[in-house]
Amino acid sequence: MIIGGSASQKLAAKIAWHLGETLCPLETRKFPDGERYIRIKGDVNENAVVVQSTGYPQDQNLIELFLILKTLKNMGVEDIKVVIPYFGYGRQEKSFKSGEAVSAAVIADLIEAAGASHIFSINLHEDGIRDLFNIESYNLSAMPLIAEYIGNKFENPLIVAPDRGALGFAEEIAGILGCECDHLNKTRLSPEEVETEAKDLDIEGYEAVIIDDIISTGGTIVNASNILKELGASKVVVACVHPVLVEDALLKLFAAGVDDVIATDTLRSDVSVISVASLVADALKPFYE
Ligand code: R5P
Image 1 (spheres, rainbow, N blue to C red):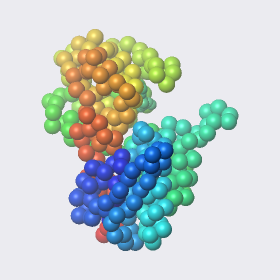
Image 2 (image 1 turned 90 degrees about the vertical axis):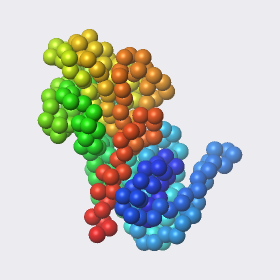
Image 3 (image 1 turned 120 degrees about the horizontal axis):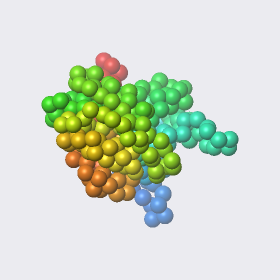
């Protein structure tokens, strides 16, 4: 039985189809004061998979997830696998200054306490988040799905990481497609501002595909795209796993001359054209055999 929280209902339905499992209906609404109400409307058995991304509105999606987990436990479900395609609060998995909340650790504790037996996520911002769980955890990579999409659309792309942190993703995709990859160097000045160094890349005539795990404010990609266009890229396309897309981030990208933006459906967005349903279903399949 698969159950989708309100952030991930379509994805949950697709995962259910891939696995040949029943999709359990869930009623969710808000009380007049803003508090969440959930009701699990289907029959349950001893195993369940709950799919809920915890992107914006993060707190609401998390509370809903906790309510679903605890309710399933109360209904007698023993084994609850939790799929969190985009893991919100994933940026702070350690304390950088004294007194800071290690928010990823707090969230991991709460998910576990609510009744999760296994955790599945996709391209966690830091793989170390898995160590915060005492239950089995899986960090799946959507890069092969992105590579397949790019491979079908572009003849000979140059894969570019907008910073060193994303180089592993660019290498993974370039390795699958057998094409070249490179990276730029970025410095983060504040949560909203980044600086990217100009770099001499041999890109004239290439279609550049910028790869990142997350597009948040869009600043990282705008800088990278400007550099690649100045160097003579014939086209600049951006692909990411998690389209967080804060406020008008997508407009900023197109206004900066980005030709196309491609993302997965770990979060719902206008550019979520690649579904991670098969990736999640493949990871769950061994538990159904
Ligand atoms: C940084 O570590 C991430 O990989 C992304 O580059 C970052 O989240 C993008 O943020 P923004 O879109 O706000 O520049």
